[in-house]
Image 1 (cartoon, rainbow, N blue to C red):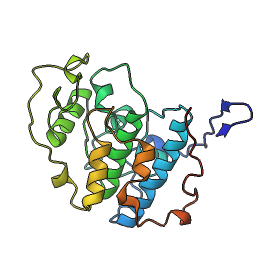
Image 2: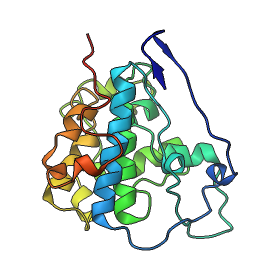
Image 3: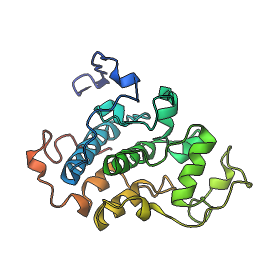
Length: 226
C-alpha cells in the first residue's frame, strides 16, 4: 500500500497456504468465461498502473499471484518456481538487458492474458534459451527493424534460428479482434513501443466492460507522474 502522507511504500504480504509455490496444483479447470477474462485483465492492469504511477515495477507477475494456476501435462514433470517464472519473463530480460522498466510487467500481463484465454501458458519454456525460442516461434525472431538495438543485447546471437512470421492469431482462437490487438500490443518486442498500463485500460477491448461494477473504479488509483 502507498502512504502519501509519508511518501513511503509499504509491502503487505498474506500468509501462504503452500499453493503459491506449487505450480502443479490445478484450481478451476473449466473453460474460462471470456467476460471474466476481460474483467480479470482489466483489474490486473488497474493494479499495475497503481504501481507504475508510483515508480514501482513488479518484475515477477504470474498467475500464482492471483491464484490462477493450471494443470501440467504430467505429474512426473517437476516444475521449480524459477522455471515457471520464465514463462512470463520479458524478452529484453531474457536477452540480458540490464536496462528495463515498466514494460516488462506489461509483457507478463500479456502472457497471463493469453493463458487465461487458452487455459495453458503461451510460452512454456524450461530454460532461458528454450523460452526465447518459444517466443520467437510465435512472434517471429526479432530483428533491428522491429526492435531497434536488439542485436546489440548481451545474449542475442546472430546464429539464432530465424522464424519469419507472427503466428499469435493462430494461438488465440478464443480472442476477438480487439482482444487480439490488445494482446499484440502487450507482447510488442520493442519495450519503447509496448503499450502502457494506462493506454491498455483505454483500449476498445474493454469498452463493453462494466467498469463501475469492479472493486476499484476507473481512475481511482491513477495519478499523473510529474
